[in-house]
Image 1 (cartoon, one colour):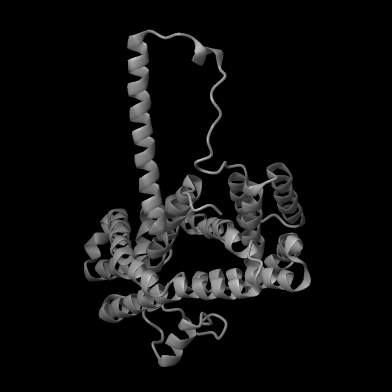
Image 2 (tube, rainbow, N blue to C red):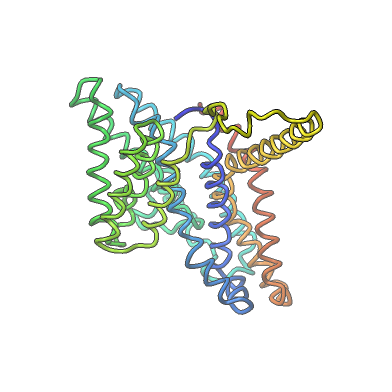
Length: 371
């Protein structure tokens, strides 16, 4: 993909990250019980529907990974890309897990059993470092740890398909073969594997959504119409076999991305006759002033979205520590139950602040050192 910002992608990442934070606030400990007591319909919606934002991350992840993986024509480049992905994901992940473990230890007297640290042995840390904690049945240190492992599995799987293409096809046909292999995996996933929740430890369970994101990126590069129709056809077939809300959401996000023009693509000059009509000097000045302010507002909004999109991984990694703090505060001061939603909002705000600090002090420096 182009290095230019993708405003739609930024907006999706920001929105999905906030949904995950609120889902976990509605899912863990006595704070979640208090939220359900005061506003059961809203708490139920956050618990049941906000977690589906994971599908947005899956599709966006595939969309962003496509350019690196499917356009590589050398196996060594693919191995390097996978290693770089591990370096991008795991070091900040381990720091965030250490933060969550430290917070759980510090707040242990006030945490309910479902929030207490279950294991902190060297084996626990090794399993997390290798992203095998779910596979070897090691209790996760923090909520959402499973997704980091799945993200890496998905990236490695698509890289593996691209590597197979480099071994079997001449350079001009490698991209086509890699896409064909990927579509086969998408079909197997959506038509069979994704219908069996006990297989959700593996990339093949999620490759349907991730792969739709890759195909959306292919549509953006063109030809747009055939690839968009392919996405719709694959998604419709999967939903016809068995309706799944999460797959319907993945399909919607993929179609949205496939139909979104690349940021920075110049628009043709207007041929609207009204735009060619002479204007008075006053109306021209007013119109220019309005366009200027609209452009500034749009640029400011896009810049804000880009900033928080860059912090979405930090927010995803660190917000669980603030979920622990909120639940410990409620256990320590039970009168806060009457203000559970205000407490949850405070935890959300604190999570945003922590993500800002984590991205600046941990994630960004680690990325520079491990590049």
